[in-house]
Image: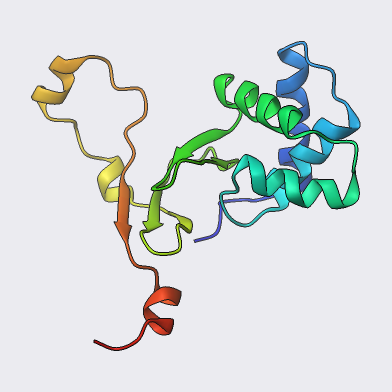
Length: 152
């Protein structure tokens, strides 16, 4: 599903502003990381971002990508999404949304669920502590994998 009012150039400016608020230098390498995050249609891992940027900018290091993503995530400028493998994925969509994770190809897709978003958390959950980010993660097999998988 598409992001609401998605303007990539505006989102890059927001990431630049977030970096500056964190007192980070906005280096050419970091700017490329921001652009790759915004222009990527999925939820890329640090390794995927690094591989794409390295083609255009051989001077970028994997460590720079990891550190930049970690700092942006800690500052709340991007979301860190845990999936089935050991790699974190990153999401620049800060609108309230949820994730569908394919257990076969590991693809992560956003979806919106206003009915869920309007629910009041059960008192048992509220007793556990302060919920900061109620999100749903649905796991299954994506339509692409279902199409290409042999019939049973």
